[in-house]
Amino acid sequence: MEINTQNLSKTYTLDRGVEVHALKDVSLNIKSGETVAIVGPSGAGKSTLLHLIGLMDSPTSGTLKLGSNDFSAASPEERAGTRREKLGFMFQLHYLLPEFTVWENILIPVWNKRNEKENKAKELLSQLGLTNRADHMPSELSGGEQQRVALARALINEPSLLLADEPTGNLDRETGEKVEEIIFTECAKRNITLVVVTHNQELSKKAGRIISMRDGLVAN
Image (cartoon, rainbow, N blue to C red):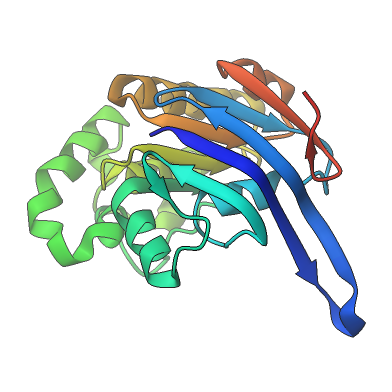
């Protein structure tokens, strides 16, 4: 999935009318199948940009296109539909539901058509080395296993775009590197556009391109 933004901006209004300009006129193009790392200090606007691209929020001004579709002024229902059908998400915290098994957690995004997705879930369990963990609860898994389950959940709807916000930030270095390798390998295999927000220089170097941000602006 190709991503195109033109003068994309986001302003938040706080108490007493104080405005925070989190994103300022960001214009960029990310090609379909490309892997991109977004880097920069805290408060640079990285996560705000990711949230807008991921249709979790709407811009204050500017244009946002995913593929051929313009989401600059999309309704909450339109954004939710595209998130559900075409996007995958990974975060620093895995957000697995503790009362459900690994198998159930993976199928949650496609629960209304889970019977159709069972073969896909089995395939992901095998590819990510989780087959023998399918009936386990999240609390019975290691940190690396939990993030692999989160990746399987993100891939179950066969997305065109995967958005990851510090996906290995809570893992030790060795485990994190293994999970990172799996993320990049699986996206390349499926021709999924990958956008990663990170402070980790080693992780950012694995991407095909690095976009640096500072003070709500693209710095390169």
